[in-house]
Length: 105
Image 1 (cartoon, rainbow, N blue to C red):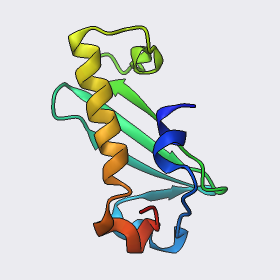
Image 2 (spheres, one colour; image 1 turned 90 degrees about the vertical axis):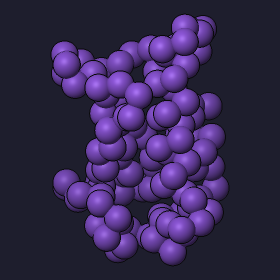
Image 3 (cartoon, rainbow, N blue to C red; image 1 turned 120 degrees about the vertical axis):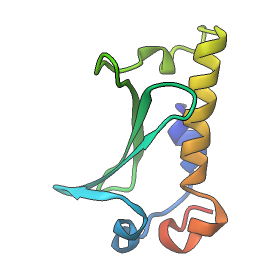
């Protein structure tokens, strides 16, 4: 199970209220971009039309995806900080103050 599935298990989304919280619709899906505070990285979160949450982190200096986000065996301190901050960004999307929007709490 990936981090998105873990955090958003058994949750439902109210699509009609996502735009009010910064999500942008593209086709049938919604997207949110959040800069990481600890590095020059950007988290891109996607909510599909089926309500599945997925995401990636990108290095803004190179434009490349930060692949170590998905490597559990990588335990370096920088990687741990990026993973923790990405997890926090995801958790912020389901906090009580957003429950009326995402119904994810």
